[in-house]
Length: 317
Image (tube, rainbow, N blue to C red; front, side, top):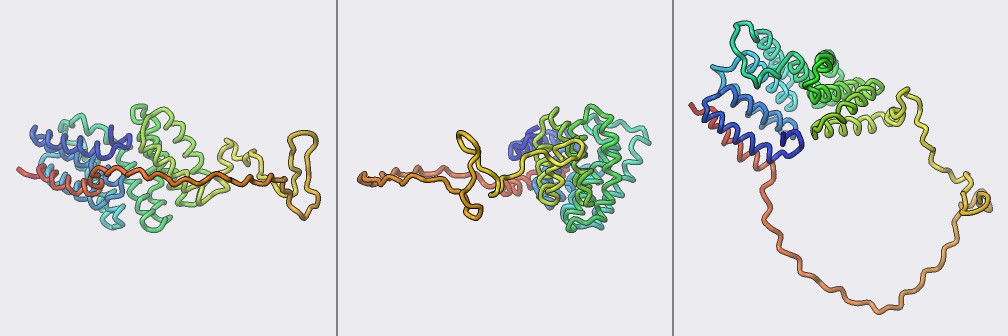
């Protein structure tokens, strides 16, 4: 919850506490899920190296007890980390491993823990499509990787639309599909998806959704400014906002008819009153001693590096 509303240091403290609790309970699969959540947080904060280390810790710690669905989730998060690191071959290999492992989920009739039931086919397609989308950004907005992400993202959106219990994931994948269309130079479809995601975002409380929606709108406005202006009308017609005034336009006055400049070549300038000279004696400003600042906490990045060795208790047998 803290992670979703933007309280990242607080969320990380809870993650570490939960990891220690899973260690004390001897629940290694649950510990791997907590580490995957920490990895997702690092990807959100632009720390793919730390995310990959956390995922490898999760895979090593649950290597002999995780179900096929849990392993597929870990492979999908590994692909996200490799994509943000700009390693396409390893990312594609992890995507294939996630798909193949997910196909074996539930075949042997093994019981699934409650916390992994969220990882459905929609989640798998969403994670893999985001991996290809991130690869497209790292590769300089490559349309090739965007084309790989589009069918997976469309499948995820189709499945999440029918699921009323995962509206946040539905909004995130709508935004992801909008960014894919921006990468493919299709701003009109991106605007439609962004408006739909905005409607879903109004019904939930998620800082992640709001942040990604703002970034997507900013990218669309910078790359396709004319389309962004016309998106306010549902029919795509040009905006009806008034145009900026020109010098040749008549200037309205406070009373009576509009006033125009005396000559068309001379810009109109209203008469200004002369400023009154200040005859007061200047006083010397009083210097107030500045308080001694309190010791600042370590930056968030340093706290992340300090927490990473703590997570290694998960791998101790």
